[in-house]
Amino acid sequence: MSPEEIREYAGKLDKMVQEAVNFQQKILTDTDDIAELYLALERIKKAPDPDVSSKWTAFWRTWGKSAIVPLKQFVDAENNKQNEQNKRNEQKLENQQKMAKGLEWKKEQDAAKKKERERLAQKHKQEKAALAKAHRRHFSNPDVLKSINEKLKSVVNEKPNEKPTLCTAVVVVEGTEPTMAFGTSSVGNHSPFQAFYRDKDGIIRCTKAAEVHAKVLEPLRATLAGIQKVEDWEVYVCAEVDAAVQLLLRGKRLEQIKTYATDFDLNYKERCAHCTQWATEF
Image 1 (cartoon, helix red, strand yellow):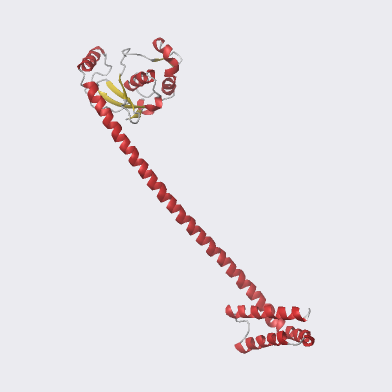
Image 2 (cartoon, rainbow, N blue to C red; image 1 turned 90 degrees about the vertical axis):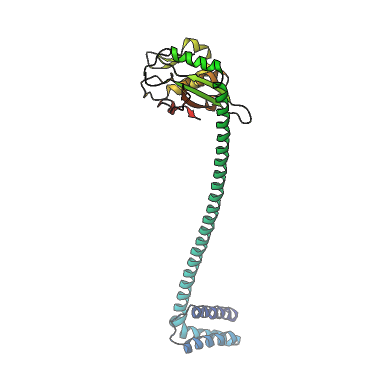
């Protein structure tokens, strides 16, 4: 090496020794050894060009294997440890930042969901009020009550102790009055408008009277065909079906329809196991 290269390398060794001291290296036995090592490096760095090479050779013979090589191994290992620790710290900080960001995102999402629930609750409250108003208005009509009584007399009830169902179906359009339909349950062959029947192969089809409306009624027919028959009566005889048919014929969509069932005394009545499979309860 040239004198300049030797001096440069000696300077690097000087810094490495300082790093070892900072790491509390115990390879050198005492402070006198460390001081002597520093002085030897200083003598190399300050030596005139003709003497640099010989001083470097002597230095390496004295300190190379006994101190410099072990010191370099130690410093490299400590630096690697420190680098790994720094990486772990950075990763930890990044994870903490991600967690904080995730918690903030979740907080925002929860707030948005809460706001949406409140909005839907308010909308539902308005819908119920509109339905109640329409319900009262409809059933305060003497002609309606007379019609209901006539239906009661004409219905052959297969379960004498159970009153047939009257179903209110409503399509709520924001900002407008709900579109209402009032259906009745079919018992036997009784129905204001029998839209469906089950053929000998077990397939639900439109009746002859409803064939002209088959395209409009198809969503409801397909829905009824897909539900599991678990009650003693057919899936298409409920008041919910009758009300839904009326609304479909009036241009409404099946997914818009909500239902509310009562008996003929206008007391709330739970839906049967058929209607729970397809009808959205109001």
